[in-house]
Length: 82
Image 1 (tube, rainbow, N blue to C red):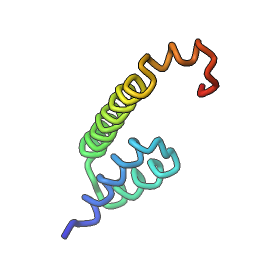
Image 2: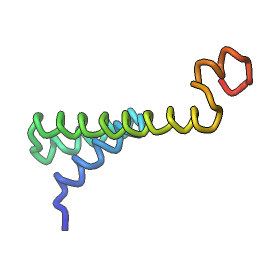
Image 3: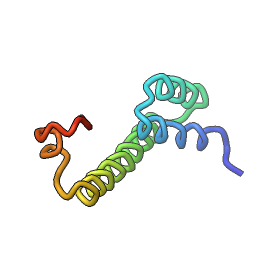
């Protein structure tokens, strides 16, 4: 079973990955109320950023796979998806 501090750290990382600013504010405040160290909060933020970068990279590859060209070329071609 996870303790409340660990749950808040997970929620912080998920908030960053989801780009949910109100969620981040809420979960950082909750973590601080529980006495979570600032260093641990920063680590959770960094993990969320890493997950987000991985997801963005995977999507970039999927766009190229699907369209046969980078998204920038698609946008300049005026296909309407951007």
